[in-house]
Image (tube, rainbow, N blue to C red; front, side, top):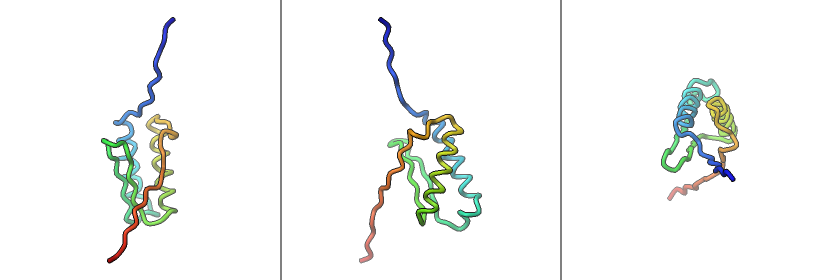
Length: 91
């Protein structure tokens, strides 16, 4: 009886293209004018790092990334938007 394996991997080049286009879109959008929003893709750990001022902009960045990932034919359910916040204290 024939058998087959199902492999679920994301094409790193397509993900990189989607993130680069999302970064360009964020830099040209009016609602992100003069904001300190940064998006980076760590290719070794396959993590997308998003840094922004508030939750409204965070949701907008997530929407932009999901839209760009879908245009690159990557399933948006493969993304996991978790919150990893680090607190800083002034001494």
